[in-house]
Length: 194
Image (tube, rainbow, N blue to C red; front, top):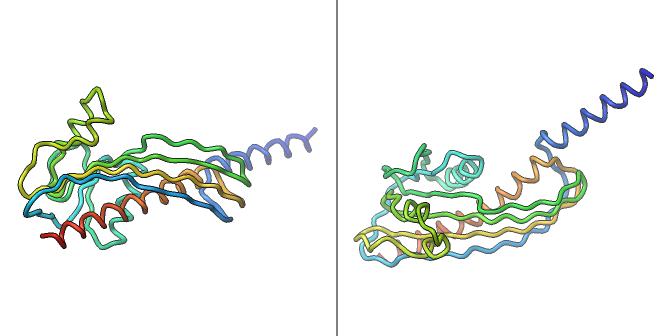
């Protein structure tokens, strides 16, 4: 009888490790795309740092990606005007089929951006009844402000040994890279047009 208790405790420990642990080894096949829109404006002004909202798991991953590219980053507790470029980012949808050896997933992330640190576009989006339409409708043209939105998609199929938590973080890291690549590209293109 003691043998069964030891086996049961061991199995519970293994299950908890795969659910709460953060480890993964193996290969991933990733497909991604980003849809974006930018409101054209003259004399765009870019602040030096970024203010990321909210301070969430995805927000921290996006902030880390920005830091890796040399930007200073701070977090906002609420969507208010800030001293850096405003970036609101959130997970719209995440779906995973998981086992410790094979996992498939898809993630859709949305973001709203302002070069002057103004959250107006994001606030209008939050209060809208037709969110899809409001996401692509910009606040009236403010001279010097570049406004934008991004919708990033990642689908993934991974094989190996991985925990559930690691797999979800893996999806968020991949979508954050794609999102920031597109945002930085749009910013660089706007700077060239100045």
